Image (cartoon, rainbow, N blue to C red):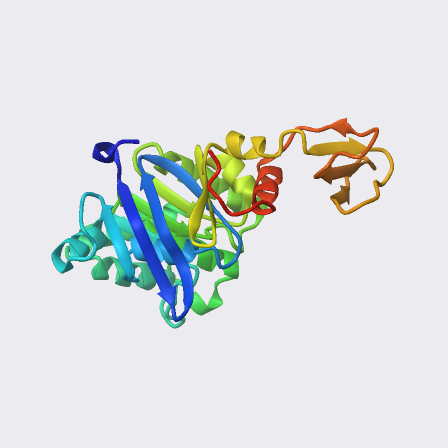
Length: 288
């Protein structure tokens, strides 16, 4: 993707907490569409999103987000008006109602006209199916409802860039499907970066997936390409194989093996999760 058409351009990004280097000379370019960000705990995913959302300053490197330099005060303020961010911990005020909470965030985003702002608050609450909970106190919401409330505030103002950190946490299967449908529509006209541990969300939703490991990009490609990392390494057999392999019993009673196929096993189609697990089992060097 060329820089002229990119929404996000990151070069040589670095961030450390004490002696722990969380992001290490990272390069990344994003454009319109939904990109899934995978990686184990400590890979640097949340830190990357926080840098892009301007809530955390990197130690080194260059970023251009929506054509702006987040390191400069004026452009940083403008950028905050044009992006939406769903963090892992939204820090809601429990005594606010759902409507008041989103309205408060809208005020912070400088939506000054009251009638227009309230119309926008009602719109985003309807988007996440919380319209009937507008007068409910935040403290009375379930975990899944709080997650949808966090998504509502991220959608305020039709953001050009949407940064979602574990957006499906606490959602039941129906709510997760609704979120996938909403995010897929958003990705048709804007840039969405979705950090998750759910490989099934990536397979169902994302046209691109980036895997981080040790603060660097380990893989950057399609979900199909990530699944292909496990080609020839997934198999099914009628009896439990011996040896040091990742094995589990499937619903039909057969044993699925990830790794060296045992004798007599038949090959199986790899999934995104298979490719991801195989990738993390290798040396953390970029995969072509």
